[in-house]
Length: 274
Image (cartoon, rainbow, N blue to C red; front, top):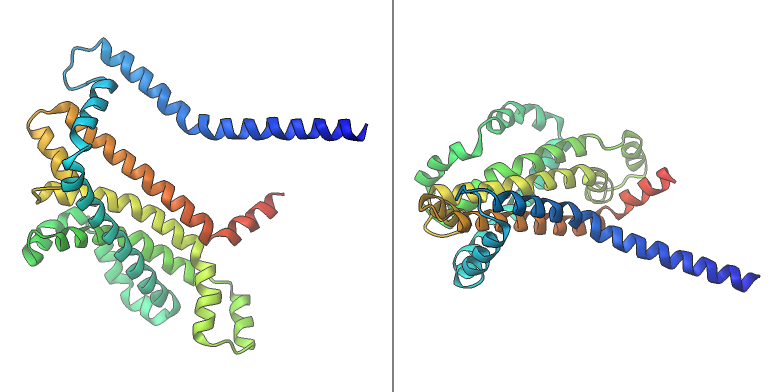
């Protein structure tokens, strides 16, 4: 009876694992596949040349982006995007931590922060072009000018929300300022910081495209605008598809990093749910 029970439990675990693996693939891929089917059926009966079918777009994707265009246009765009995201994270967390720690600094800078946050980053592109010229530095600065705000503001809120009891406990044990910052403040603020980084990634991707559409002779945004101006519709849609894939890659990379950085946080949530 015991051996029989063990075999039943093993089969149940195997079926449960198979269902979890199937669900892990079906849930993310099922809806996109269904949308592609609907898109293909709708485009097959449409005479609108601006609404090509998925197969036409996939063929244009293969011919356009698998080759020299990937090196000449896509890689430089991804490089500028990575620089802009990295600079936004470093500056946003550093500045947000300082502003969140010191009340007098927060009160001093709050009107200025609200003023610059209200300015749409695309409006700054002509100004940055005049100051820095049409260079890669200009495009990176444009990305930072928008992506930094979610990270900065969420860091400020996270630092301010540090548990007062924990802070008093750190004072009573005479923990140094750096130890308190590294082992108390930043871990306590990390969930909100990661929320700001997630928001900043999408803003950075948008501004990368906009900066290349305004002033550039290469890049993913430039190519999409070029295809649109020359009525290369399938190629334009293939560029949009590539942008979506870049966004999915960013989200997946962020998910891996977030799970490692916030292991303790997700562990606490699992315990509380149990």
